Image 1: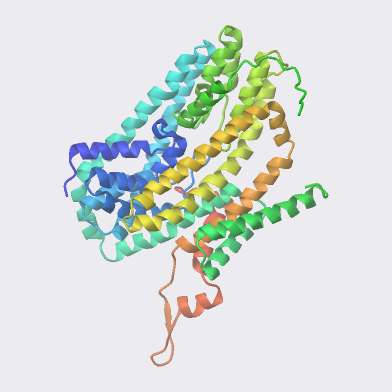
Image 2: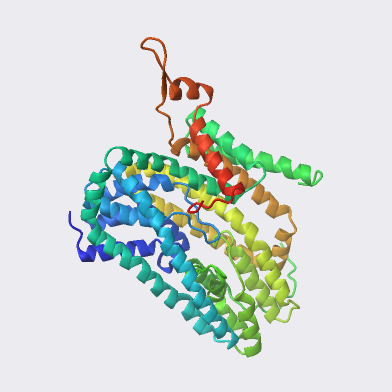
Amino acid sequence: MKISLIQAILIGVVYYLGINGTPWLSLVGTHGWMRPLVNGTVVGLILGDPVQGCIIGAAINLPYLAFISAGGTVAMDPALAGTLGTALAMAAKVEPAVAVTLAVPIGLLGTLIWVAHMTVDITFVHMADKAAEEGNIDRINWLHIVPPQLFLLLITVVPVALAAYLGADAVEGIVDALSGRPLDVLSAIGGILPALGIAMNLRAMNGKGTLIFFTFGFMLAVYSGLSSVPVAIFAAVIAYVFTELYLKDKNGGLA
Amino acid sequence: MEQTVEPKKEKLLTKKDVVKAFWRWTFFSHANYNYERLQATGVVHAFSPILKKLYGKDEAEMKAALERHMQFFNTEPSIGGPVLSMTIAMEEERAMGADINDQTINGLKTGLMGPLAGIGDTLWQGTLIPILLSFTLPFGAEGNIFMGPVLFFALHWGIMTVLAYFLWVKGYEQGKEGIQKMMAGGQLNYIMSFSQTLGAIVIGSLAANFVKVATPLSVHLSGKESLSIQTDVLDKLVMGILPLGITLITYYLLKHKKYTPTKY
């Protein structure tokens, strides 16, 4: 399948909309949009087959299940993996399982775009400082939105559109070259990658007995086979009881 | 039933102003996200109609207010949102003549943003999103667009936005006393402990279901017998010990060895 220039640019825009905090969909909206499950479907729609895009996007989403971005750090970029990964996988007509192994390295490149965004934006803060000294609030509002978002649009749409437009042939070649052992290695990495998101989540939680409760949840799921929704209900009960007892003890009987 | 209402000073802000600030924050909090002051300009942008209304006629007060809110600010925007709506209540009191100085406002703001970000990220990115995904991803994998991506996006956006709106309005109503009550300990510790415990258990079940590691190793015994390390040894010992071990090692490296996800 050939990706046209207009399709490639639209895919770039889909990626832009999934960057943490772009205003169009609200911050919470970008956190929905950045999931490959969602943006893969949209990319599929652009390429004329939303169902295939959805299937590939769902596969690419697996390693990013527990993805977390906290305190301004982003370790991997599910939005880039989902948009470019789905586009290239559909163009090269590869299986969803292979699409994951292509998308994971792509997702790592997204951190470069994020760092550029977070660094260049500092300039606009310094300009806003000057406007604050003058009491010019309208200028701060303009600096807050227009320059950073134009810059972000540029550094997201251009590389992704180029990669989608020019990359499809290259990807077929890469998949052929990697078939066999290298592809197995990449898919093993895809299987381990959720561990990174989970570990980052655990570190962000950093509470009393986090690792003990984590291990408990793990064992509960492994041996009971329960899915995460019922586990969450049990977990809420346990969290309630633990918190009552723990804080009661700490406050000398006054919970 | 008769109620005695305390005589109150006329408020300067209407509910409409407070709600407007909520939507500005919801959409634009991260428009200029950066390493130096993170959401600082987002705060000013969200507050700007309110600051104009409160200090628009007083240039010196306006400059002071802008300087006050251009300081470093970073929180999880939905559950940490009430920090800002409480700040709005304090700004309003200040404009009405109450004795609230810069230190009070910034002290309460920065004191609360961290703990609420921790609670917010745990409940939102650590618990709600993975649960919703683990429910909708299997539908997506079968190509069911409605039960997969559409349902995930709608549920996630709806739950978080309704929750954030409710907390924002509540935060404004509670105002400074609300902040001080939360800072004093009780409430905040309670929610924190609850969400950390809940989050850790749920994340544990996700690791069990989605981290895939197995060893193909096997040991050849006498004759045609062979012993698969995975099914005959590890699974009998503790099921899932490899994924559990890998996750815990990753956690250890991140926490104690100062590794970062992209640098080692």
